[in-house]
Image (cartoon, rainbow, N blue to C red; front, side, top):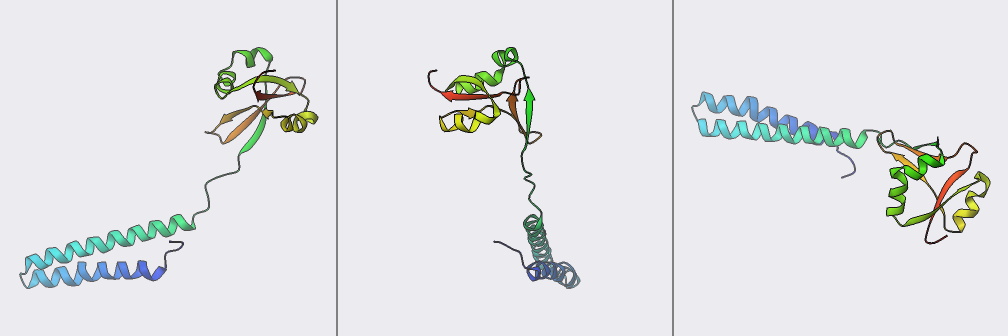
Length: 145
C-alpha cells in the first residue's frame, strides 16, 4: 500500500464512535448486555484499525531517516595500523596485502584490485578513510604481494 486515503481513517473513527456511543448505550438501556459488549468490542476494533491507519500514513509521509554517510579522514600511524582490530578485520575478510598510496594513485590502484581501507562508525553514520601523516591513503588487496 503506497498511501492511506483519509476517508479510510475517517470511516474507521466514525464506525468506532457509532458502536461506542450509540450501540453500547442503546443496548445497555435495553438490558441486552451481550450486544452491549459486542458493540464495545467492535468500537475498540475500529479504533485500533484507525490508529494503525494513522501510523501507516505517518510512516509513509515521514521523510527518510537515512542520512547520507559522512566520510572523513582518520590520521593514523603505521604502529596504530599494525596493532588495530581493523587490520584483523580486513585480514579476516581475506585482504592481506596492504600499502600506503598517494591520493592521486588510488584510482589506478583500485583498477588493479585494491580497495581503500575504511573504519566504519555506524552509530555516527560516518566512515573514516585511513590516512597517514604524509597524506597517503591505506589500501588493501586480496592475495599475495
